[in-house]
Amino acid sequence: MTANGVFSPERIDAGTQVLLGSVPAPPPGGNLLDLGCGWGPIALTLALHSPRAIVWAVDVNERALDLVRTNAQKMSISNINAVLPEDVPENVSFTTIWSNPPIRVGKNELHGMLEKWLPRLESGSDGWLVVQRNLGSDSLHRWLQSEFPEDFSFVRVTTNKGYRVLRARKRSGSIDPAA
Image (cartoon, rainbow, N blue to C red; front, side):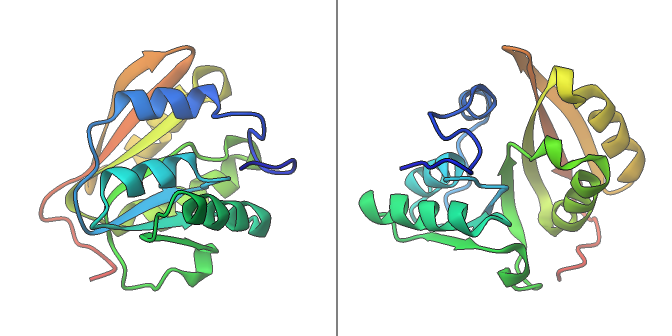
């Protein structure tokens, strides 16, 4: 179920399709994050592939969160928490992050989101971001490399249909502020 007023109300958007077709299977357990979940295609995929994990579907749009909950219920998925960002406990860290981040919120807002959530990856874990090339994927990649030079490595893993998939790997031994 989708709705107007939520990103890509007609179908799964091309960027999300590229992400879902490019990433390895998610970890079987732990806390998994879909950042900017919209109506939930990424969160639902994570939950189906990792039924023992807790999937955090995070968005600022209450309507989107209601759609995630409705879709999870219709699919008999019980391991999704669809919540506002402030409702994720500070001590929760993630074994993966998958995101088609809301690029159009502006550079400052996007950077703030990534500065908040990427450090919450567990040591040795990966975050996966899909960004349209025309909407600044290469400049975002450069910013990530300059902003998190010691704690992370960032690699473009694929380009498909005008989208880039970036892998953010939190280096082992990095200090985790959530710990």
